[in-house]
Image (cartoon, rainbow, N blue to C red):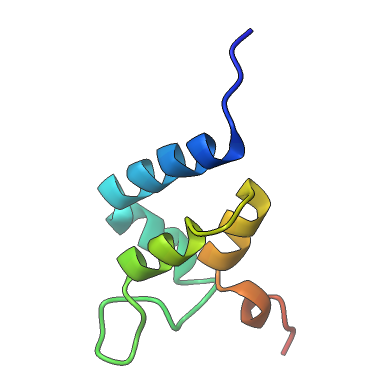
Length: 74
């Protein structure tokens, strides 16, 4: 059995997402309209970098999808 750490997992996911950022953006936009390519939006690359600073996969995904603001209901 081979085991890799959370940080290795996060690095692997980060690399994949950066290579496939167009497809990732299609998934993230419906969850968080503050991410995108327009002037007032946060670039997907920056969000991926922020997410990769987390210590767990859960934290990575939480930040990637917009954090607390994306969990608030209308």
